Image (cartoon, rainbow, N blue to C red; front, side, top):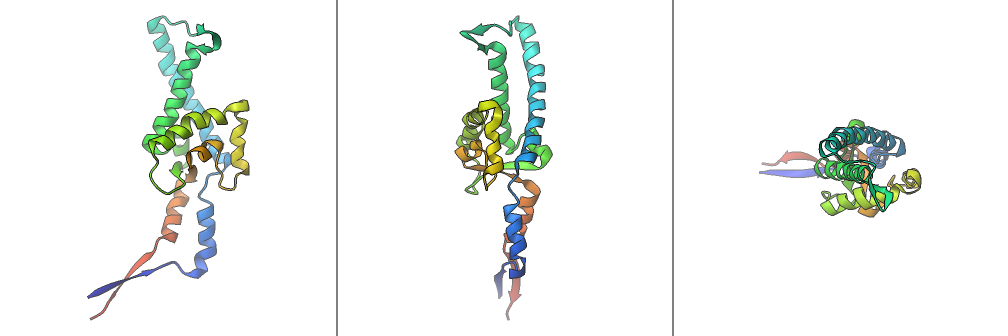
Length: 181
């Protein structure tokens, strides 16, 4: 008959373990680089999608409704921007910029991201964070959990994927088999 005993990491590792758990959250610098990469991707998508579509359908991209902010170009660019962030985060938990930097978006509860969380984070959350020339993204610098406003609204956090795997290995119980006859 075999008995399984759960052995947790030794107490001499606790300080290091605590540092790993706290360092999984991605800071402002790495998130800024990911966002800049995403900006390049979105600009490329806009050029690939919008310009040929405008030529095929004879759209005047500068035409607007009520105010210049409601031009065809601005509306379609906003759709491409928000759909890119929503779809990439929903399907991959990361945009191309985050993937390049080894980051991903996770729920603070530890559960899988819900579509409502993703939608809240990527549409109204990004819209609010974009006020004042994107200055509200600086909240990440001053928040102890390294969350932006869009993260706080949706109960999410951006983490380093490699450090998360290391943290999971350190905090997971190690199974040891003892046999007794």
